[in-house]
Image 1 (cartoon, rainbow, N blue to C red):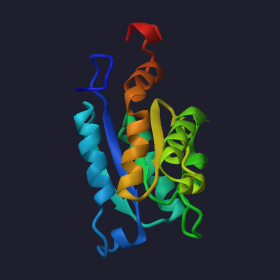
Image 2 (image 1 turned 60 degrees about the vertical axis):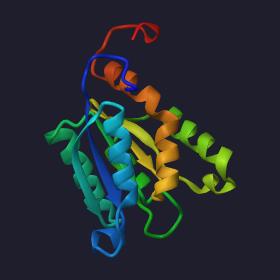
Image 3 (image 1 turned 90 degrees about the vertical axis):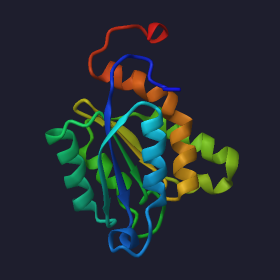
Length: 171
């Protein structure tokens, strides 16, 4: 069953941040799971890419996917911890027009129900132009759990972001 509350079809991109994955040394199981989940919720996966954890490359890709490709939703997976190479939240914050803290708060709350290690996730969510960008953890399990925590709310939020006028209870 689709989580979308409107008749709109939204496109999305999945950006996996992994040094090993970008070199072909690790299979991207997180990105594959996110593809399945988003497709199952009625999103069209228009872009998918695996990049190394390099801030400028992440920023450039996010800007291209929003400004040129006009994706409705972008989810990143990886680079949200506290390792020296984890730069995804910083890259995302640098290109946002505004943050949407409720999304990351909901994801961390869901993680903390499963493991205390959720305190280490630094992923953020926000808006650039009319696109929503969400940072998910890199592990397949955590990425899936975090997306599952907010997926039911995404279609309505994107609808409102794009100018939809129906009230929350009506869509």
